[in-house]
Length: 65
Image 1 (spheres, rainbow, N blue to C red):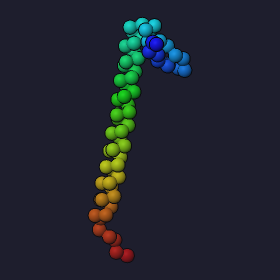
Image 2: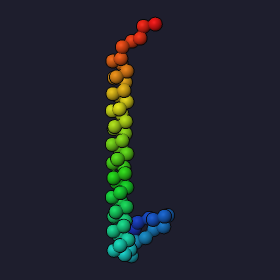
Image 3: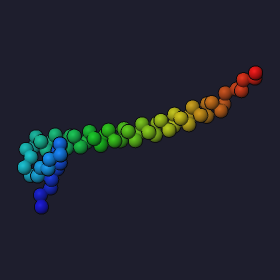
Image 4: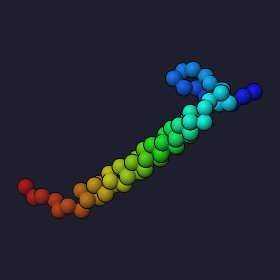
């Protein structure tokens, strides 16, 4: 059974794709992977930022009324 890829809801056999189409598909997959890695890194950074902001808030002097 030939490997297939689904593009825009339609299945294509990889063996039927041109070399350029295969290169574009590989590039698209790489870009998608990088986007996902960056989303994960952003989530980590947002968590760290929230922790630093919470810590800073706890370190501020209490205002007397």
